Length: 106
Image 1 (cartoon, helix red, strand yellow):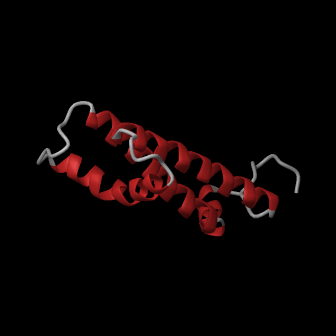
Image 2: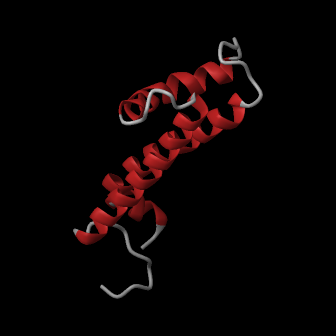
């Protein structure tokens, strides 16, 4: 199976996995950039990272104590998204819907 066929036939796996990974690594970028930039910085990259990740941070803030510093909240978001990706992949594997390695027996 070539790459184009794999992407087209397993779009329901690749698209959500890609979106979750993009959010995950954008949160990690926000953490690293937050060490160098003020919270109210006019930097367009910082504003982009905040705009993209604020919905995830809002959901994580619901289940996190209010006394948690923002940087730790962002890292919790990274970890929650990681485990969401793992659970998504595992669920598709259990349902036999996830892509397999080319050498695996059918």
